[in-house]
Length: 148
Ligand code: DHK
Image: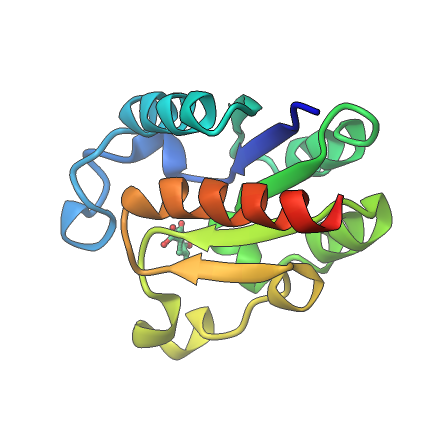
């Protein structure tokens, strides 16, 4: 069976490429989407790739994923560190989710060390820049292969 995955990107990630490249790397979100499409095709899964700067829109995407996707990769941006509402949405939809960050949030400011997403995620990938997206797809597809 071919799995479908949703890759959801939160606030300010639309600015990748020009946004603090020393932290987030030189790759644009459009380039990352292309990288993800290639990885998904190689692993024989379909994917949707979405970005929003709005917490409620991200929650709407999580709710709408039920019945449409088998798993989710979420880079919630700064909402990772603040949003109980996103955490509750992830808990509510009962879909496996991989938490993703370009930067190593544990090596940065203390306020980035806490994640509301981590307790409701299958696992977390951070610190590998754009390559983390491909790693997250591999991790999620591997998880789906053994869990559903
Ligand atoms: C992206 C952001 O926008 C930050 O607010 C997070 C995350 C880290 C990232 O590394 O992808 O703290």
